[in-house]
Amino acid sequence: MTAVADTVRAAGLDPKATAWRPDLAAADLEGRLSAARYASGAAHEVTALAAPVSAEPDPAAPMTSQLLLGEPFTAYEIAGGWAWGQCGLDDYVGYVPAAALAPAGPPADHRVGVPAALVFPAPELKRRPSGRVGLGARVTVQETAGRFARIGPDRWVARVALAPLDGVVVDWAATAERFLGVPYLWGGRSADGLDCSGLVQVALQAAGFRVPRDSDQQAAAGPGTPVDPSAGLRRGDVVFFPDHIAIMVDDARVVHANAAAMAVTIDPLTSVAERVAADDPQRRGITFVRRPTLVSGA
Image (tube, rainbow, N blue to C red):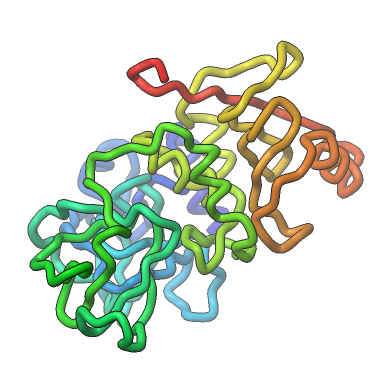
């Protein structure tokens, strides 16, 4: 894997967002990176309520990211029960269980607008739910019955849990705060578990931003203008530490998914910086700050 990453970096590309292997690569890389063959890829969407993304086609491999229901995925190869390709919302590359995908269908018309919506097998309040689906999942409302909307075969969710697909939540710090207490999960992007960059990503995506997946990518190419932290921070600023990321909730505290609490918490900015320094005295404090701004100027 390191050799693959080094080859991609040598071409001036991000290994996490470049669909290249020595034996197979995305067609648009021809001429930039050499591969045994190239593929245009086939458009798919996630049909599972959530699906793991991993760097290897192995169910025991660490989850590097997570796809939610209805999110797009371009598959360049499907073999051995795995699809290798690129996540449509952030270009993240990895393997996804093929059973969690299907060829892309009609465009979605709604998204889940709450941290988690229960999924029922019928439009009946007292039925046992079959699962739950997370904030930002993309769905098509096929019919309604009372307070419920059908989003697939034997899948009904409360209508109040849905939002227009193009709707935005302008206060992304408030979106992140809705996940307080959710467990920390490496690679997670849902109310079942989040990592630090996953929390930032889903919160900013709800505000309409296109956001890379990992904190190093978000520092390099995330939304927002770089800000000098000595000039003062404000709600919504995205603060980067060595291998960590958080969102300011006011001028002194951050909301973040963290392994210290193994949960999403709100903590003083100074204590987070001190904790990072305690873990590694050579890597201290804030490394970077971005200030996202909506196009409307909000």
